[in-house]
Length: 162
Image (tube, rainbow, N blue to C red):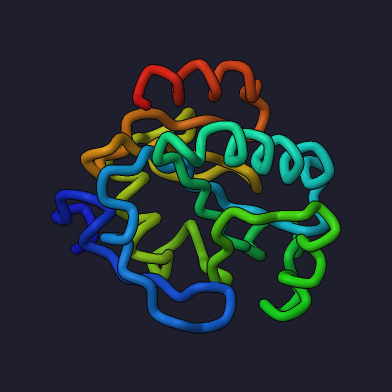
């Protein structure tokens, strides 16, 4: 079961091009893991803010991992190829992954783990697109953010862990 895993490094996920990626590649990094959607009301503010955070701190071993998800009001119905094309308008350079489910019994194991370590207002349930998890350099989730949490708050927390 996913909750038995000790760090994010125990997981392998698919990148946006369908290749397997071991999250061990992020060993020693502070990571912000976020479920994204192209047709959400938060899209136009979140993609630029995520890219700004990534560009500001990437040289200090900070990474953003974005996972498209279509579980909220069908706001990410596109295929990975079209998602990749869509995010190019935001000049996204952080890592994009394949579409996942973040809730339910068939949720991506990584998300089962993240939710088991950092529950939110609705327990382990993710409420909406652009929910975020901050992971420390040891691969342990240390903070969870709602889509409404300010990027100033998130950035202040990133600074604590970098």
